[in-house]
Length: 406
Image 1 (cartoon, rainbow, N blue to C red):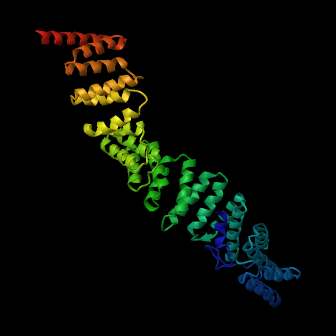
Image 2: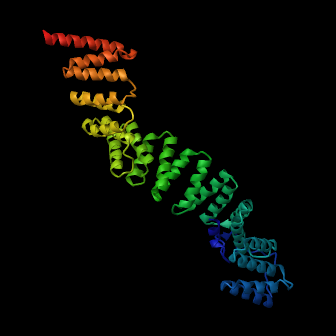
């Protein structure tokens, strides 16, 4: 990335005018003798033609002559441009430093060199030197480009001086006519570092508006959640889903769970159903049970049956069959409920085996299968937490039997 910063490193490009550049320095004489001018001009022409060896030869010849400070500064200036064009940044830095040290160039020219020197310091990872010289340049510049503020922000970021970096990137963004993604990314990173979560969310809002990407939407969802704005978090996640940015199993399941948490079960069911159809989540117990639970919360009981049966068949224990049986019982489908309970008891590993036996007894009782009902309630009495209820149901069975025998 730092090499890209050098794109502006060309002779005569300052990026901004120096304050009062029309009042150029008068303390030095800016005269250049004809022989020296000839060499300097030749070196510039050769540099423009990418003949770096030729340009350096002309400059080396000049170095053997007695030059006034202005001529020396011009020579070091062209040395710097030639070396930087060859990516010999360390040498270019020394040449530009010598150029500035001569203090013998017009203010606008020196401004250009300071800015270029700052870019070279960045390329060489001399970030403290870069920030110092670029701030010096900025102090004397009129209407500097927003990119200059961004460059200084990078220099301070690399020094872990986040507050300073943030002040400059905020100025860059304020001065920019259109949002710049890289600058917004830097601001976002700095807000994260400084734990300024409101600004994190606000920056992400700009990013998703102008540069809608999956990563920004997901980060915005997390940012809203961190701020306790759960409804906004769901809305952001929903918009990400609508744009096709949520494709991973965990992302789709998270969206479904968020819908359930916010009592929007129908949307949760549709998300899971579509994910199963598109093979984005596995057809395992957890997925089918999530779909079933979503339909149950939406009171779409008939649509919950098939996923519940699938989940129950895949489960290692019988508890899902209990949930299936309860659904059948609610609809007074006694035979289907009894079969589900038989499957639950056969699988075992139940959370509440006594409760399952009571349900089995109630199912048999409603089918007038009194002997089976008594067996189920009698077994349920072995479990302390179910003993009272099982005894009451046994009494009820006896009364039903007596009623039917009379």
